[in-house]
Amino acid sequence: MNLQTKYLGLELKSPIVVSANPLSEKVDNILAMEEAGAGAVVMFSLFEEQIRREEAAYEYIYQQSTYGSAEAQDYFPDISDFHVGIDDYLRIIQESSRQARIPIIGSLNGISRSGWIDYAKQIEAAGASALEINIYYIPANPQMDGVEVEERYLDIVELVKEVIQIPVAIKLNPYFSALANMAQKLDNAGADGLVLFNRFYEPDFDIETMSLSHALELSSPSEIRLPLLWLAILHGRVGCSLAASTGVSSSKEVIKYLLAGADCAMTASAILKHGIPFIKHMIDEIKTWMAARNFDSVDQWKGKMSQKHMKDPTLYERANYIKVLEEYSVPTLTK
Image (cartoon, rainbow, N blue to C red; front, side):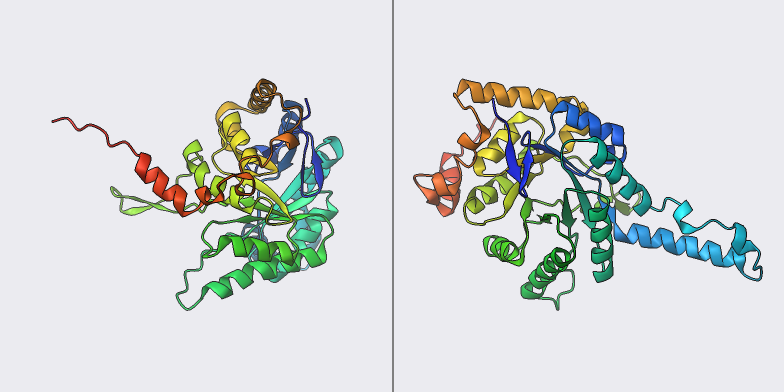
């Protein structure tokens, strides 16, 4: 049975891709993911501001320690001796790319023009098969309109594509006013893939301490419906690859995402909950599902339930909204 799929022009042995998470901080874990059947691994995200902050702290300590003492410069360690984030990150990419046979995808969250350029180049040089750019940006300025927000994303894609040769995917959020149009613009700007969707980690309130709470909650299967909708709409309408992210807790979500038209499904939650070997469990269940329907390959059923292949494509638009409301069953209320 053939579970191979193509994402970003890369041949994947399975449609399950491990998305960015702390487990990829260790090469042994990445190799275990490959052994369990993952088609690719997206590295944990490299945040430019973390690197800048650590470099600034180093520079401050260096200046305070060497001020007034030229001899101190001879024994004070160079910044390359400190693992400030980028060195470790590149080392892990180098080692995992050398040892693993599956694609290793870098993940970059930049904040400046120089950061996007410099770190993208370094990630490529380290041996990454592709780069996922994660633009975590909340347009809180009321003077900024939608066009300006879109141009910010498009400029970053074009900038990164100019300086590296490996494929580039962009992790999108669902908040664009015309998402289908934005997806097409990103495709035209050179994006090799779109990942639907990025999760903004909004703060919560602790009403006892009257403070912000930043507890991270893993995604759940109930969150797949929005990316499922847009994957089904975009399949066949953009030339770049489509990846699903958010809510993949079992093989069911993987199957649904691929039926909608995704080339692969990314998960971190399932692995963090059940362990790396759970990847094999999901793959076995996908094979069982395929065998029951006489499917020999993923290509036979990928996109089968996309809007493009539906007899009534309006079901993905307003008609579906009305149908859901009509079929809702009001629960019986008890006194």
